[in-house]
Image 1 (cartoon, rainbow, N blue to C red):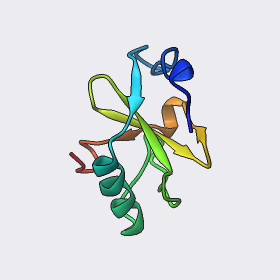
Image 2 (tube, rainbow, N blue to C red; image 1 turned 135 degrees about the horizontal axis):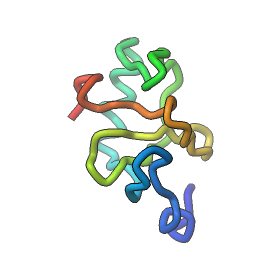
Image 3 (cartoon, rainbow, N blue to C red; image 1 turned 135 degrees about the vertical axis):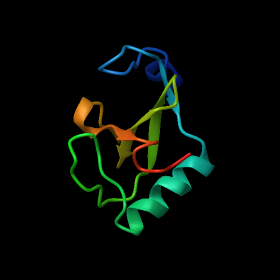
Length: 87
């Protein structure tokens, strides 16, 4: 799990907006889309592994995956919620 101290310093690598943990409800929606094979990251690659969590940008447009307690904060790893029809 990501500590609050780490959360306080993490920012979006693209816009430098603060990040916060996604809600359980949003995480379920994202994982459901992954299981259906309907989710791609910003690089256009399919996301095939369920997320353990996610870090959502302050504007609520991008989620950076957390898999096996590791946050993936490369711009291309981000998941665009609108593009993937997740709200």
